[in-house]
Image 1 (cartoon, rainbow, N blue to C red):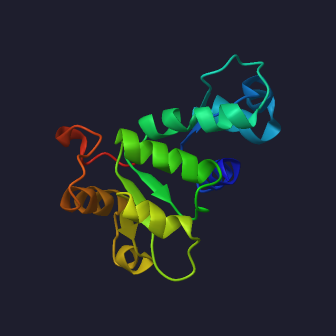
Image 2: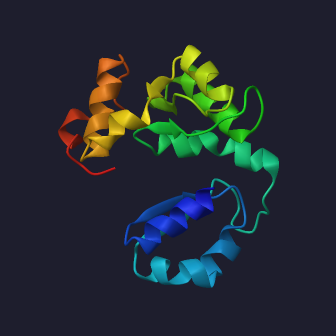
Length: 160
């Protein structure tokens, strides 16, 4: 999922930061990412040795780094009590690193409402339809929900 999101952001002309759970050397040499790295539109980092290989444990462990580098967390779909999305979201809610938005409404997996029960902020797609600036909307919504933003107030106009 992370790879797809980064590839889509790059294709749309955006900038990306990838926190890899392993294989940093290999990813940096991939044709897909090489041009973006050269153009300074992509930064890759890992809390592990650049030659370390992917493991499920390292993917789960790096969740805290992903959240720590974010202004918000957004869970689109999570199983209940299993998987990396659930584990990372729950860890973030317990540590309160950043406000966590969770897609609400029909068609969500069982983990979504359970994360809302544990303090996640419900996110309805209808809410975002009228928002021209999602960053501003998320900041306001997290403040209303009682979550402290993870960025200094003077940076509130920076894009996310």
